Length: 615
Image (cartoon, rainbow, N blue to C red; front, side, top):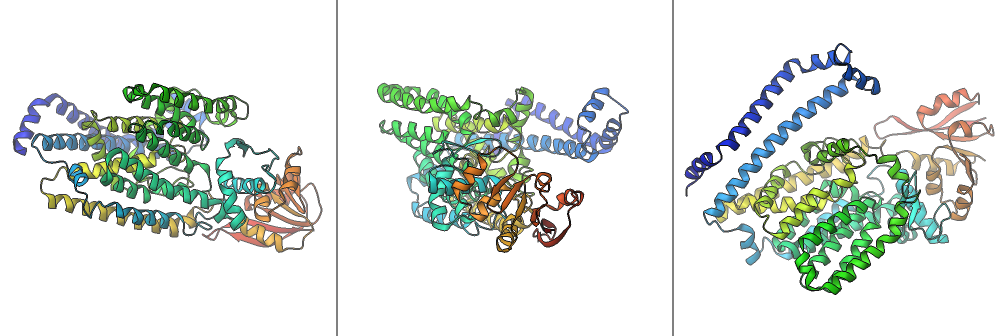
């Protein structure tokens, strides 16, 4: 069957579907034109209270929002609708073309490469991929990101305290869940940080090195997982896409525990797939899935749901060895007992009470944002800790590879491997959606998932070509786009990002504390940054534990006092005061005499921290 005949036959068979798609497109076009002509004036009328009381109530509740906020939200909603509509059209087109190629007997590109990998898909490319992953994750860890947020400093100091005393900064003996800022975090990352802190000292590089190594290791484990799942060609491509993934790189360079969840999840899934051939691996898989629950809070929801889907999908295979299956289940449930007691405790519910709430409509809206083209390909999220400015969590060329991967996934749903990807795809946003929209950290399991979809999409696109030379040309073109995108991302991350993101990373305290350490002042007062004092001065853990166990807002560590600035200024003893520029009015109202001795500036030239001397 020739392509014109296939198109004619398709139009006859799917006339109603095409009419519906045409009407939806026409309605969207008319709505967009109407909004461009009258939308802003209508919004202005609503905003000023000239219409719809229900809108007035909304404005009263959010009176701090400007009119521009509503313009941006509606404009973005219109763009989201267009992106969704065009994505549906492209996806349907790819599915039908792939189906046509299958009907005409065109050989599958991936099957050809699996049978004879050749030099293009040789496993000898894996060391090169790991080198690429290392080049994006290891250089400049101490200065990019530019600063150190409180959670990183807390993890680093806890690792230091644990290595010295076996207790965290608050005096808890070998904690499984360590107290942080308004929360109790899984302590796994703190223990992994102990060797690097002991070897390199208490600094940014030591705190972030375990995350970088975990990120590199994840690329290797992900290769083994996809190789076990779909064969070497797709495994190499998926590992390469993960090695250069902006989403995964971002969290591989932050000294936080989130990066451990994808690693342990991929390990658990790898040994589960191995257990389908050698059932003895099922016990190892169960232990690894338990370990993943102790890495990051998002796993508490995702892992049990994913394992439920896994058990339903592979129920026949699991029934073959009932004793092993039952043993693995008992081991997993036993490992969850301690977690369950912690989750329902006041400490375990601290963050949940602050972030979770029963609002199904809001959760559903949040859920959809994790499939938004703006979140994935164009803008990322508003939090500069999680993504770069004006860059998505994936590269823009991956719009086509991800959609092609989805098309191949839909066509191949008779394959259990593809069904398993669907389970992963449906479940990955749930932990994040229960708290907020577009949070890259809580949805980090999407990083490996979309790398796999992109790799699958490359082969799906290659299957559109009949001649082998066209397939290779298409593959070369995609690889060129991938490398070029990675180079552009690298420049944006290592050169531009440290400048404009410094505020988000609490830049300035390292430089301010270095000045204070060299000064001879008897008293140094630091406003609302106790963890920076502990981290940058290396306070003895026993001294910190004694001070932090005392009640009160002000804590003393040797000559350093830290707490809310108004409380610190009640003591008129002369010395240094380290504060943010916006706190200067509080200092002026205190009535104390003072002079500025140093200003620590952000990379863009604005003031970050002010150091003054009081008399």
